[in-house]
Length: 88
Image (tube, rainbow, N blue to C red; front, side):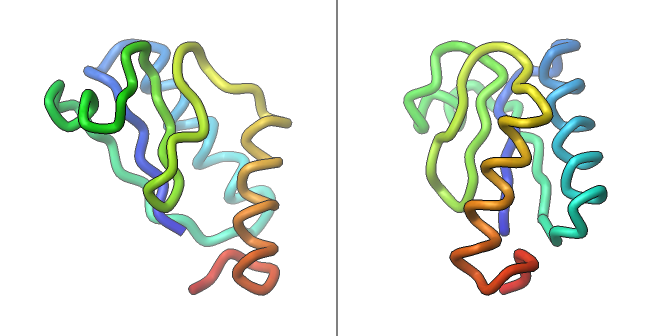
């Protein structure tokens, strides 16, 4: 599963990245995390409020730090479409 955190480096963007790492590790779900800081790349996703979160090419969040439960829901939903553990 590929997850991109969109943002220019603000505290909320860094917190979002760290929280996703923590929740994925707790759930034992393999993820590839990337930080996208280029404004043009961020805008190409249609995200105007950061941080944004993109999972496998789909924007799932924009603006504010997502909650742990929200992140767990994204990861679980994606993992279930891949056979349980998020591995491709």
